Image (cartoon, rainbow, N blue to C red; front, side, top):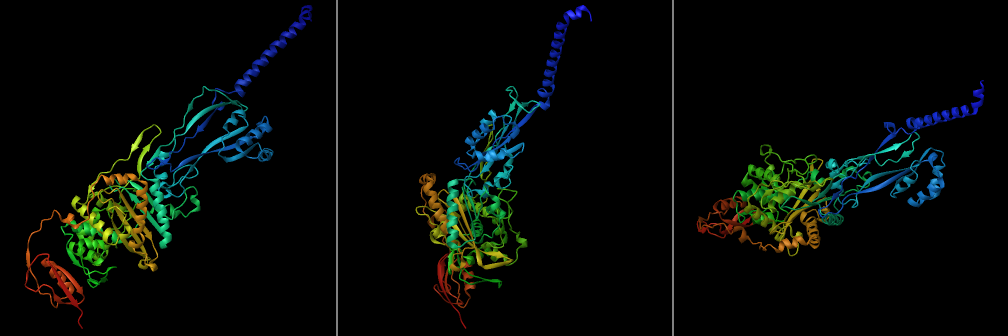
Length: 638
């Protein structure tokens, strides 16, 4: 070694060490950048999803029908806990869970343990204090605060918050939120690095949907149906309230129902909205078709028919009425729900007239409420009718319709002759403040204004004086019709099980509410199977309660001049001509032949007894004014 090296040996070693330390520093820094803190590479950045809220359903008054409950799932990386005792104490204080529970889980020996699967306590602030050890994930669960109340209308979602039933399924694309995202940095050791400059895309909540359903109406209708089912021993029931002027459905109940919060606890059949999906034979509620066809054909409400039973229909079937009468006019035939009178009017009108009017009222075609679940119904063309069809169809047999179809046919009478499309969604309010309003449907006239008013007055007479008396609402003019039909079981009409119904609307002067009540199999042994006995009282009890909570109906009524339900109003525009006819000789003729001959002559018969005519109050050959009344007496002779 040279003297210089020896002289500067310590300095050279120091420089070497310094250079080596510098290179080590560069190496450490480079390793940190390239391996540990790979911040500018995809591996160093994590995309986290941000969930939005599913849109909610509201009733017409803005009351919640659904809610989104927030839950938190809490887990911990046991090996990354810096202070176990502190974390356990703070987490226990937040959730209320005993500390011993957490200690046992953390000491299980696993690298990651779940401390809370579903808690409603928000402990996200602790995640900031223990960013590498504690994991808090927020999730949402659909909740139905009214339980069963609107279950078959709204439906429910699955575990992934996707609608699978009812309106939840039908409007899922509007209700679903748009997920957002946020970026976070982590180093090679998995440690989160704060960086406020990273972009975040906010989640967008799903659209809210406002329904036409009135939650208070819904509760009233459901309560009254439950009470009546217990009272009359019915297996099931349905109820519907709508505004006949617009087609807006205000309440729709099917019983039994289910709880959408626990749908797996119930039979899947209970999820169906049977008012829309199921077919029934309407029975006497279908008689409005014959009456409307009669009015459209020019038949007078004062025209009388012999309804004395039994009526031998073409030697096929003996027709009888539940309440016997001798002679009834058209208005009374509807009021007393006379099968004989209705069938005779229908025979006079013919198949085509009945078919055309029924089709105008929407029978045999969807209402347009929900094309995916709604059937057309069954209403055959006249060419496929048998001879017996003319004694079945006019009184509501050989016809199948949904309860909603039946309701909309009556709505056409209540609103002055227009068929409407029913609807239940009022508007959709999107997250960007866009509002999709329900498109008001086009009205289709199916009945003249004059005949709609006449038919309304006929239905009012039915409630005031006929089969619908138990549907009367004190202080209000109500129009309505009862219905009773035998259930078709295994291809045979049952003599023990019936469908009992009543449909009505009010106020008569300006109808605002229409209500349909249907009871399945009320107790026939107690004579409760008649629509007049079991369904009509429900209409009254429901409307009494609705009037008490909804003062707008009272206001609407007070603005209208109260009409009197008198026959003179129906006939006020009809001119009467003085015509004279000759009284025929009816002695020795059958009741049926005598009735037909007087009807052709324009004379009104009042017949008592059965068999052959033995006396007549007006002598044969006498010139009398047309529409005079002749009293006939008949007797059976050996």
